[in-house]
Amino acid sequence: MSEADNKVAAEQLSDDAEVDLEAEFKSSNVQEVLDKLDKELVGLKPVKTRIREIAALLLVDRLRKQFELLSETPTLHMSFTGNPGTGKTTVAMRMGEILKRLGYVREGHLVTVTRDDLVGQYIGHTAPKTKEVIKKAMGGVLFIDEAYYLYKPENERDYGAESIEILLQVMENNRDDLVVILAGYKDKMDRFFQSNPGMRSRIAHHLDFPDYSPEELLAIAKLMLAEQNYHFSPDGEKMFAEYIKKRMELEHFANARSIRNALDRARLRQANRLFASTGKKLKKTDLITIEAEDIKASRVFDENKPDK
Amino acid sequence: MMTNHGNRITQGQFSFLPDLTDDQITLQIKYALQNGWAVNVEYTDDPHPRNTYWEMFGMPMFDLKDPAGILMEINECRKTFPNYYVRVTAFDSTRGWETPRMSFIVNRPEKEPGYRLIREERDGRCMGYTIVAYSTDRPEGERYS
Image 1 (cartoon, chains in turn green, blue):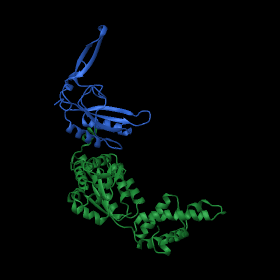
Image 2: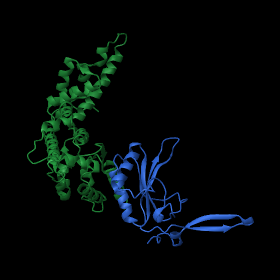
Image 3: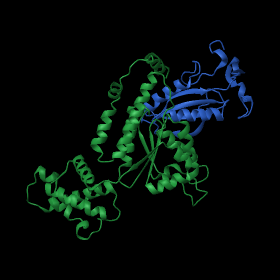
Image 4: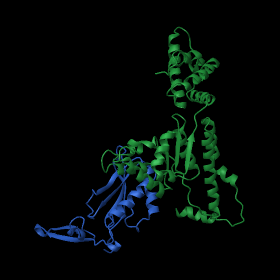
């Protein structure tokens, strides 16, 4: 601690000194993380913009410190709202890494919890449980999935309120120690914040994750396949684009998650197709290519129902 | 005692040094966490050196990444038991070790009266020696108050 203080004191600059924002930016390696974010996450324009803004703020804050312009540590608690499969967890995971690079959190690990991990089953059980989770998340990011379940207005003796209270306290007092990210579906989260105004006011960043367009979903599918060393044949790609359009109109469409499931099923069918073609010598390309027929066999095409 | 200034009990690590500051405690805990040891907080008001098993404050803390959470717990314990001995132990669960690898005191009563030496004459001019803490004359919970 004292060493760090000394360092700051030594770097203390006079009023007309110049600082190099670009050099600071480079030395923090944030660009690398942001590039990775751009490359691996398709779409999500508003989210990426906000992350860029946060990164800029933290960098400028660092420079301000060199002039001893003290400002309060910005609150970085966030709420992610959006439909299922829009990348909320993935972004939260990146968030830990970004904040660590910027020196805002110390460890940058992500602790994912839901109501079950926070709320106890009997009186006096909730506080230790919530505190345990908070302690685990310290130095990193606490990601509360389906956060609206914490508050059940129809049951006034529900222990969720106690958990929220402890969370609020920690979010206020231990701002340097952890970042809390709440996630959930838009409408339910809105209702949650309405009944917990304290929570709303302590969260500075409300990020809404938009649904993906069909083109974006196709790009995501290709990324997912590449990760597992597969690729579409040209026909397969066309067929999959068609599949996405059809699937989007059906019920229970969960954006990238539905795509992942569809790909998993396509891989099953591909394996089955290869298995059925006995007697034929297989080449490497056979093993990694998803053909149009692997996708065509989906129920989406002939029955207009999502696969089971 | 000539060698132990101020009658401070000397158990575990760093007990001959001045009390650790919170920053120093944080660094020590960080070391323990880096090694993957589970850190927990214990307290007692019986300073006898053979009093090995102290009361645990809260749950043992597994899977922590950052010392801040443990420091929070230490401060909570200090607040609850201001006039008790509070120590931090780091348990190593690796097979073959399965034992505390670190243990140091983070809180002491304001006044530590020390120990009385009791001599017991036995058969054949034999002498038995034992020590008793002055503070343990009073019942548990009322010592050091």
